[in-house]
Length: 359
Picture: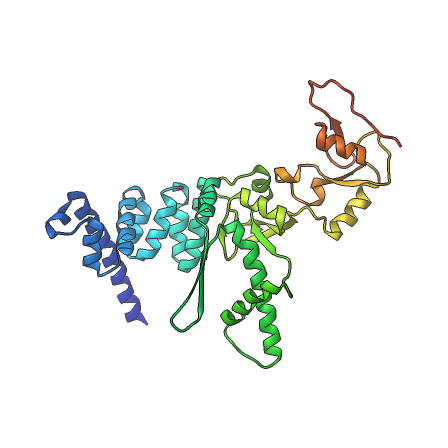
């Protein structure tokens, strides 16, 4: 075991030395004397690797000039080439995350480090257009291989894929459990294929439930800031705009997280869960607009509108009569305050008194 660790340390240090030396070859254009078409091609030939691998290694070496802590850890053998590449890509965008990511690499898996690095990039850029660019590249392809099997491949934007993957995942585990009770055993991937096929006839296809890890502040604000995350497990980072779109079309649960701990679960869809509805009816027995005493035919309103990121949770809901609900939705009236201290107002330039409905 110690021998394996020693060999691994040597490989890491050698990888760092090779990357930095290749960076120097690129700067001096010494690769031209080898007859190679580019520094990347020269490096791929030297490494015996693909052009993609060589390009990643060279790009990492270039970024190390700006990231002293990553460079030091890489040269000392504390980071592998893959770890250095993941950290560099994120830390060059958000320098405040450099030390955190280097420390994380010391005990986390590469998959966990990659996931955290993507979160850092997504939070720092907040690029809604990034996901639209992915959507424009979407495709679905199928072909028949030499054995006659049908093969499929595709590319989807994260928010388009999330409900689909949620449905397939639930159906996969249902089929697996059914098969195990019948004494059958196959790979999980086989049941996933069966789940995909089962969606065609619609039998047993559950509603998609998507868990989005994000703070309610970011959801309501409409974008993340440095240090925040908006992500779906198994999918990766998504924009807050994508989370809002999912909330409009799927059953979405917002998992408000503090580090790795989930502090609260909020419902992001328009549908009011039964427990919240019961609590709301008890809290608001009549229209909450001051001066209105109507108790029948009340409608539930999102105080911060759903379209603006308002979550479906008790502190963002109130019961209004139909008249006041319409005034708030269409005529610019606003409900603010807290239960027992509600305020009903309109834009100051209008000058009209707040309407009431005592019917």
